[in-house]
Amino acid sequence: MGMRAPESDAIDSAYPLVMAEAEWRSVRKFAAPYAASLFVMVFELVRGTKDSFFGDEGVSVWYARKSLGSLVEVIWSEDANMGPYYLSLWFWVRIDDGDLWIRALSALGTVAAVWGIWLVVRRWSGDRVAAVAVAVFALTPFVLSWSMQARGYSMAMAFTAWSLVFADRIVEQKGRWSGPMFGVMVGLAVATQISTAFVFVGIVLAMFAFAPTRQIARSVGTAGLVAAGVFAPFAWAVISNPSQASWVPNLTIHLFVRNFLSAASGGFWALMIASGCICLAAASVRSARFRPYLMALAGSASGVVGLALISLTAKPMFIDRYLIGCIPLAVIAAVGGWSAVWPR
Image (cartoon, rainbow, N blue to C red; front, side, top):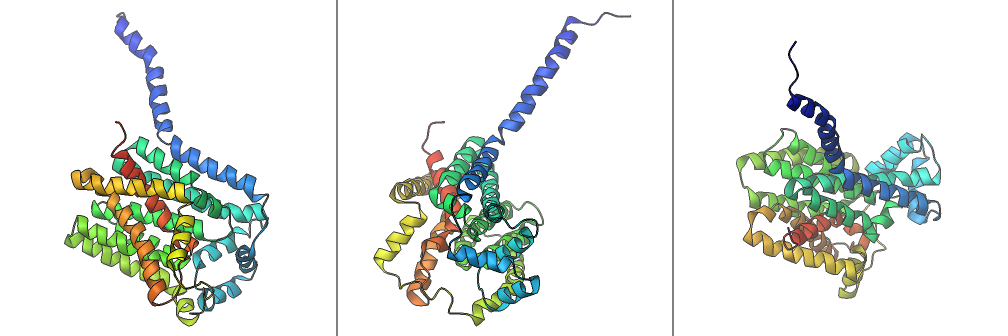
């Protein structure tokens, strides 16, 4: 029998080390979204045991403890917002109806948003920028606040973040189901928080600005039909109960600034987000690499402007939590802008 070459022995001995390093790299690239998800859940565990339910949370719990038929009647004819959340919570409390368990559903909505942000930013700029994006999002005080509340706002953030994942795939013309899935996310987001409709106006306009092709037009048309179908069961309550949110005061400059800063988590966070968005606008002029981020920038900007316009012309709706769909997109846009100027 022949002797084994020394090189073969060296290769065999090194093989486990090579495989271990490859596995570590595979785990490490998912470290950021896992860490952000764990942080949100632990924060919910700590804070959720300390705070009692406030008024609107009590409404959520009351709905969830009704019979399914009574809940469907409420969603169909009375409550014009959060239908998908109420249905999810109804099934959720069939497992357990403790306060912490009820609030855990909202925390899971934020976790879903974390993964949507990570996927789209990682595709555009790689692991490092994606890690910064999910860290900023998970640490944003306004996000953490609504991750603890038994309301559907975190779920609206998740649907908005994932809509950007599928919008990107439509622009890249990847996947035959990207159009319908974009429509599903849009329909669920609008049914959960109707003010997110303004966010999607900006996203769609940016999609056509990037690639005004017939294929994208077909995908967006399909998405529109799917979104209409998803939203349809929740639409009648919007039409038949226009008095909802009648307590919102008329929009003034003071009210605009106060609610905008509240949604941005205060002046410091607002300054950080604004600086990143300005950097993004400048970078996208110089390099096409940053132009996909303009979908996020357009969506967050149109969400704010659209809600302000409808508040001035039709019905006052400009309060901080109605801007919730803008938050994940604003974080994505800001981090994309920062990545254009930080050292490589």
